[in-house]
Length: 254
Image (cartoon, rainbow, N blue to C red):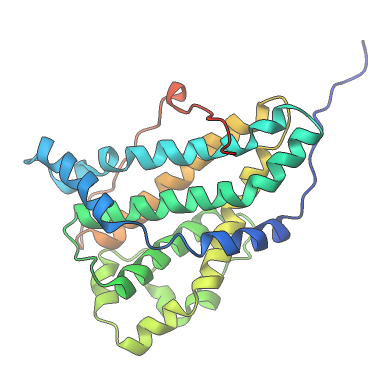
């Protein structure tokens, strides 16, 4: 046979998908501090003498697994046609789930490094800084410009113990960062969203590739959070790969 078999490529408007997602993900920036603290305390109790940096992987493991499983919303794409359409409609929800796990992981890293996260405003701008750093790292188009989003505060990106610098900002300076929330979330969504679209390729090819990419997204978030919340000279955190058998595709919620 001389003919070749080509997988159909679903065509979607990424910008429109992100706009639909924005209404959902804006509500995910304040995870339960109590649940995060309980998870951190449980790990610490089992290994009281281990340094915080060496516990990051264990504390955030559940977040990485759940983020990878978020692509389960793409499972209907296994059936070409109507299945792909159903998956496309669920993409904003999948994007929200990945963001939720990213924020939760960042909060756990902060608690692991004994940061006081009871100030919701300070915690929020720290998370926004982490998400901005993640978006810049993931962006392959060059369209995400930190200076345009954060202005003079873009200098905090990549800075060790940036949380200390954030805590020292004036109320006006904090508000300047908080005012960029929509721009930061949109940039993050545009950086993370396209691989989720790849999950819509039928026959099950896309979901596994998208799941692996979501692990990569979480690893970047965790590394950025370790830099922001950690001490001025922390060792580089290493997050191990999730074994493929643990990235199970759960059925979409009805």
